[in-house]
Every structure is written in structure tokens, then in C-alpha cells.
Image (cartoon, rainbow, N blue to C red; front, side):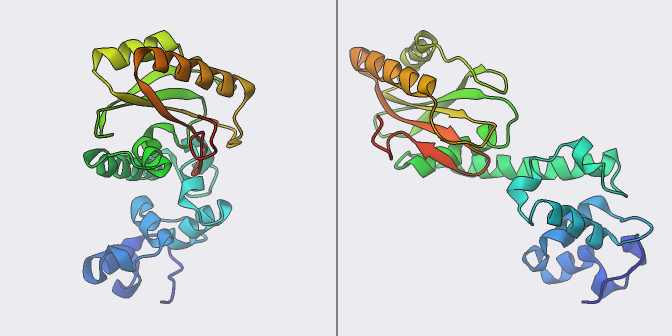
Length: 231
């Protein structure tokens, strides 16, 4: 497909219009750049919306997970991307994350660390500060609730075992799974992470509430205490 030089999609030939391509050929036939071009509508005086979208994608190695880390301010540094266009891109990526989480929570029976990652992806991926979450599970290992226990700063967050087990007892949880994120994307557990996990596991034994895992989230990957035999 030849790419037009002008900025406005409405002035392109029908074959070059991403919106027309989506309507007549289906969304699966569009490239990432073409989908983003639909969101921004136009490029700048030097490049089309598709070219501009591809430039933005190239800056993050064509990785949508990395693109979702860019802020509105980051995006407006590209010529032709104003606040409204940047907000559209950020909102679309956030909807994608939440859709993934909604799909998982409907059928959220925890059978692996990956299932935990999928259930909490929208809450913990791509955050610039630490948060600590807990999944409450019934006897069939189905998620009954996901709870934000605390929010911290860039360096860490505090999770109070008393608050965690109060929540578990009030909701009749049979077991729990711990999760928090590392904004640095370094998945190695800190000494505090390890000690806190041991403390919560020990308390769980007393209350007969099993701690099945502790997941550390990065941007698009994770570390599982259970998988590494640390719990």
C-alpha cells in the first residue's frame, strides 16, 4: 500500500485510509501504526498519521507494552501530537489492559502463577510507584475478590499482615495470593520482600489461611515465589 504524504486521513485515497481498511477488511488486517493513526486522525506537515504513528512505535521498539509506559507529556514531544491526541492513545491502551483483566476475572480460577499475572495485570503493570495487592480465593481456588492493600512510592510500599488477614477473614477466604510491582522492572525480590513473605506465610499457618504465592510484577513480566520454591 502506498503511503500518502498529506496529514489528514479524509484526504487520502480509500485504499490508504486506515478507517476504511478497518471497515472493509476487518480490524485484524491493520498494522499497529494504522490503528494508532485512527486514534490521532492526522499527522503533521511533514508526515502522515501512519508515518507519525510508526515513528512513535519505533521509539519503543514497536512494543505496545512499552508504549503504554509513555505519559501524555512524553507523547506530546512528537511533532503533531497535541494533548488531545496523546490522551486518546493513553486511554486506548488503558482500555486494552482493563479488557484483558475483565476477561480473566470472569473465569479466574487460579491454577498457575501466569493466571495471577493475568488477573492483576491491569492493576500492577506499567505503574510508576509500588502497590501491594492481595487475591482472596475460595476452596476451589477461584478469585472472590482482589484488594489493594497499600500504595507506596518509587522505592517501596508497606503491607500490614494484620490488614491482609482481617480482609481475608471478613471475606471467608480459604487462601490468599500476594502481589506487588517493582517500577524499576527489576524482578529480583528484595530482602524486605522475602522477610515480609515469610512473616505472612507464618501468620497464615496460624489462621489456617494458606498463602499460595507472592508475585512481583514488572512491566510485562513477573517473578513467582512459588515457581522458585521460595514459599
